[in-house]
Length: 323
Image: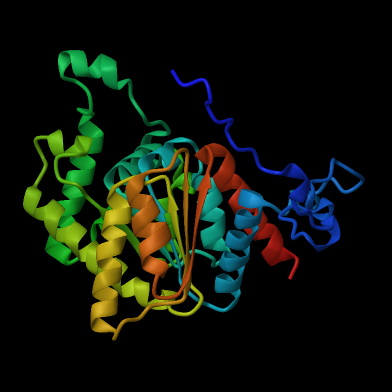
């Protein structure tokens, strides 16, 4: 090896330039920090105490968008997955319907099933692993028969699937907890309620009373109803996807496409937000990103449903009451 090996170069550190901190742009300022509990222990005080940063900032923007839409009579479409219903969020959504905030309630099949069982029997959600061993998972007689018969009636009378479920509940002689049913609340407040089935993915499709033609007819009618409700999103509406990782993001993207197809590219300039426990591909692209490329803003709020959705409901109610 050569003995005249060259020493590696080093930068002349004394030549490094600095800038005064006064002229450096800062992404974080002390004025944006959270505040600890003080004299004001109200929910409004709690909201004001949050730091003006990252997801707390996004959360406020979503709340503001919902409040603006409600006060300006623009559409607020709320889409649900089943987990949202069975974690006890129904009363929060019922309150938002009573306040005139929600203009369309859409859900996947599991959300409707959980809601139906809570309303009729006061309980829902079974032990899947235990029932799978002996083939009894999802085989509740009353749930399967009641809902499938509702769909057949809906096909006969030209109702959507959501309307069919609501009418079945309304016609029941005894309901354990009608006050908790989001499907029934929407129907009673003249809010379109739609259910978007995935054939074979829901327990009621296992039942002997299942009728594929009735399921398809009523659910496709609800798809058309959701597409029609998308019109009301134009210039100021809001779409909230609460806990649906696949079905509702896919259905919404197609419904929005149909709405824009028949309305010359409208609706545009609305807000979307996905609330879920973890980030998924379809809600991210089909709710948060793609729909607002033509105008608007999308947000992704990550957190447990049983925490984040009550926070949203309370924040919206507080903002509306303070106006």
